[in-house]
Length: 445
Ligand code: TRP
Image (cartoon, rainbow, N blue to C red; front, top):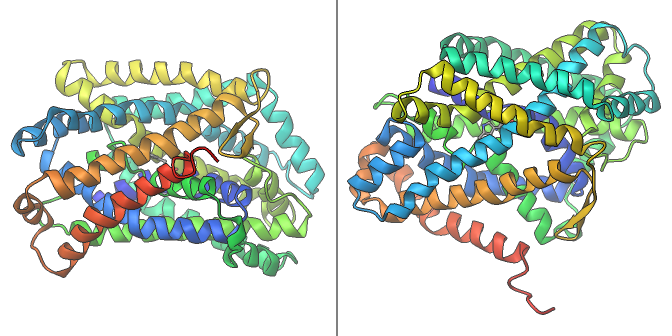
């Protein structure tokens, strides 16, 4: 159940929508390589730490951190891990829901047969129309937030976890089908080369920060979502094994999505740096030109919506769990309240693609979708890595070694390796990436 819930949280828009588009924007292979290194040296160790904290506390992240701070005689400031997670989850969900709304809109478009025989130009134009129409975006954003709030309000997640068991493999198989299509699209070797042959001249501090931030985002780390699910993990389950399994599945889905999309990009002469619309501009071309495309296209966007749904739930669960524990609010009231606030903030993202768009530069990169990009950078590239860094230091340095050994289930080789990486490599890595990206090392130049 933990693996199903955590996989449901991890696999989502991050893998299928975000990974391909930021890979395209950041030059391909070198970005992918840095991302994989970040998954191994930062993501997996922190996932293990976050699961461990959750299982030891067995409450909402805010109360778990309060309890652990007391048990370990630590300073009160560590409780900020719980609080910043609540804020990050709220901010992320506000734009995540808008993007999930695009997937919903595409379910309908696919089902109406609108992809049939579509050209690259028509597909790009159709996406542009959706983006510039706040009314439509609002409808889909609202629907998605209602879906999410209803599940969280009823607290019936077991049904969804069972669904993950069937629907995730189905999504995986559809991705394989798309990769099969991509192999025959005429752009496969170019697409694969773009993803897997690194051009190291493309690596800048900003690229590394984005790759590291994405490692947190895609594994749902740094804000307490995995901590909540860790609190369900039975005492005898292996934290190390389950974390590695989840990370591998998550990475596999992302790489498949990349392999499905970039061949289409090259075969149709589309720009790799198309931005957040990348999969919505490319995949309709694939579905529109394959036999049974209307059926497969509809199914694909349905499954993508489902994957986004199980992720969205994990984004508000920490705060709802806390409200229910402490404020003695009923679950439906807590979920509705948080859902409503998130929905309201989502309007900012809806408008950021049209009327409220503005350009700005962040670490030498021009961003053109105003507040959407700001929310994304602030959460994925700043808040999640900071939250994760704090968890690594807390589990690696503040907690007593015996506590972590007990929770980990022994101090064999896996434990020693994890502890070493978590204490030295992970915190150093995150800190260096931050300092470098924010220009501390070359101040004055
Ligand atoms: N990991 C999810 C995705 O890739 C998004 C997500 C769900 C998330 N819960 C999270 C990201 C918690 C950060 C923190 O789509």
